[in-house]
Image (cartoon, rainbow, N blue to C red; front, side, top):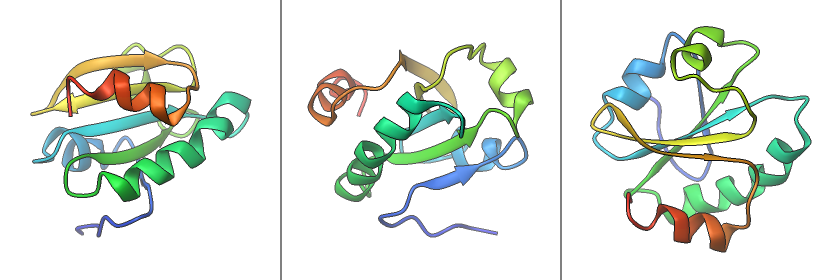
Length: 112
C-alpha cells in the first residue's frame, strides 16, 4: 500500500524498509530512533520541519530500533539517533547524534 508523503515523517518497519527506503526514487534520510532516547526527541521537530521543506527532494522516515531489530542490526546501528542517508538502495552517509537544523542541512548538502 503506497504511503502519501507530505509534512509528516513516515514510520518504516523491517517489513516496509525495502519498499520505502531501498526502492525509493528520492534520497531517503532514515532516523534510527527509540522512544527512550532524549536526543531522538530533540531532533524529531528538526526532521519534521525538514520533511516539509524538502518534500519532493528528500524523503525522511523513522525506524524504531526496538520494534525493528533486523534492519537496525543489518546496518550496524548502535547509537541513537543515527541518521543514515540512502540513495539508490545504498547507504551514502551516516551521522550519529542530535544536531541543529542548520548543521544537519550543511552535513547533507553533498548527498541531497
